[in-house]
Amino acid sequence: MTTTAADLSAYAGFALQDAAIPELPHHYRGKVRENYSLPDGRRIIIATDRLSAFDRILCAVPLKGQVLTQIARHWFERTADICPNHVIEYPDPNVLVCKGLTIMPVEVVVRDYLAGTTSTAILTMYKAGRREMYGHRFPDGMKPNQKLPQPIITPTTKAFDAGHDEELTAERILGEGLLTEAQWSRVSDYALKLFARGQAMAAERGLILCDTKYEFGFDEHGEIILADEIHTPDSSRYWMAASYRARFEAGEPPESFDKDFVRRWVVERCDPYNDPIPAIPPEVTLDAARIYISVFEAITGQPFPLPPTDRPVLERIRANLARFF
Image (cartoon, rainbow, N blue to C red; front, side, top):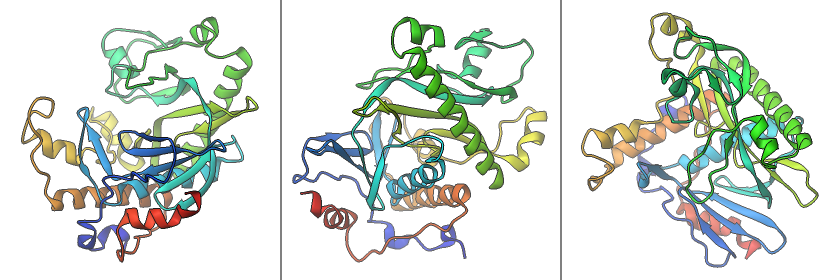
């Protein structure tokens, strides 16, 4: 029996909504992660189970934080030979201790298909009639979700303080001094090699890694380090390889992970931008948990390690982080 077929009812009240630990210094609360900065420059990042959408927190999905932390761990460990990353240790399934970095003001997005729905997505721009994007020229007559001749880098500004990403080109990055030519060359090389590794490993699992976002930073020596997360379903677009060709030829969207399960449930019941969000019942969040677990298992090829339920998640995390107090 796969993990996703397991009875998750024991986890109905097991979601980690908040991970504030007063004994840890310099607390910063993100949408879904709690961040702490230690005096020696290390950072502690705790992934909660909060689910953010429509500019608000909708609910907490049991095990979501562990799923995303462990998917990123899977990829960090399998790409460390390509690019140094910020990982120091994982003292708990939801927790990463990492190097403190100066985050690069450029986010590196690698794409291999004409896809996406956001304002910075190349498909959105293409449908609006643009053919020059991110310093690349696209021919007329392309179809949605069509494979590109080769993967390309479409950089954006790093949106700090809840700002919006903006389109960049290599010329603008260098011209505005966001990065030096040597830094941009190194980052581009890292990104394309990481993406190639990700695509090859995803293909072994019957998946297409369509596009992804990388975040890099500089350590105290100026070395470029991979940060944040890598190849998770929150930072990447995955499609099912077996059905891609037939669906593309039929003009249908590719089959993908159903990450919007809770969002659709909410939209069917209210205007999420203007109305109060109705209480989301446990059976909905547990179904969402099963989806996240299925994503972990599809990407890694490993059964998801269900944690014990003998004590609350935050109590377990506090015990595993006690040596940092």
